[in-house]
Amino acid sequence: MHPILEEVNSRWRQMFTALAAGDDVPPSQRLRTEGLMEALVLIGEMTPEALQSAMDSVYAESFESPLADKLGSQWQEFFPFPQIPAMGRRAPVYPSAPE
Image (cartoon, rainbow, N blue to C red; front, side, top):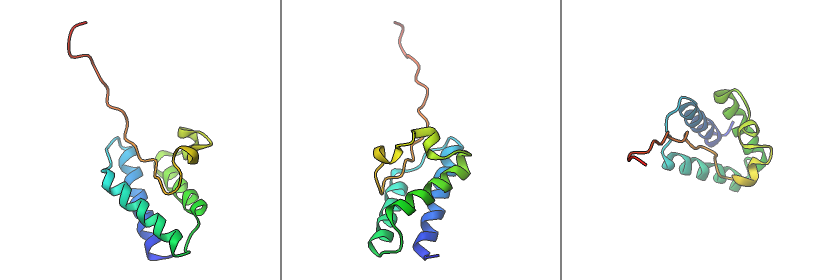
């Protein structure tokens, strides 16, 4: 396995494990990983489709279901390569003033 791909897999695992636990992921971590994904395609090591499939597998390890279960079967249209769908859960919002 290419060393950059090993690093990308490690970063995906860190991100998705944190998100599954309810933690946030810094945008910089996601953006740097997306850059590495793009680099793998530019050097001819992987195709965008292969990387998205690999990312989906790592996601499923953390969330116990594939991305399509959460985002729909066309999730790649909302998150085109090299975007990583790494969003935290929405915080509960309560009114702070009487209505």
